[in-house]
Image (cartoon, rainbow, N blue to C red; front, side):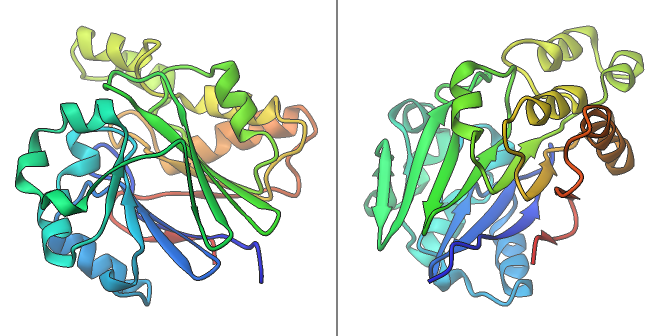
Length: 258
């Protein structure tokens, strides 16, 4: 057995999010925020089939995380896990097969794989991040985060692989075309994590992950180059992170760590 996690980010950004975490012969899809047709196509592009998935894990109920879920779950009859606040707030639940809707336990265990979830501050009913543990290795998925809490710090500690939000450059956002109220929402404590905040979180880790995938980048208020430069610059300034491989997820192209 190997503890190596394979991450396939099918789509990441404000127009839709979906990521496959593969380890120990198990494949879990986190969020289904693109159409069923797109999901199916991109899953096949990774070399998998939708039928290879063991389930869908939802982070929260916002449209860019669930838009393809009803059709996808009906077509492939996959179990979909979400916590009670998310299910209550999910308008498309009535469009899904009841047998597919599962209440997310605090810890989901299957054949040596442990999947835990933790609360994150975001303007959703019950947003969560995920921790996958298998054969001594640890993978953490963390997006849609208003600010870094102690609970977040505790859960990312020891991660070997980390999918981490780097949504915006603060100056680009402030000078951009978004309405003032939307800017304040994004910058607020229930909004999204900036490039600098992502870099800061990494700089506070006692042991950096071997791999980091920067995710949920804004197409209007960020660029892949700027996100990478900012995060890498913070790590270099602290003389850390030299051995960490950093990838940047994309809205339109699959990004993999393998």
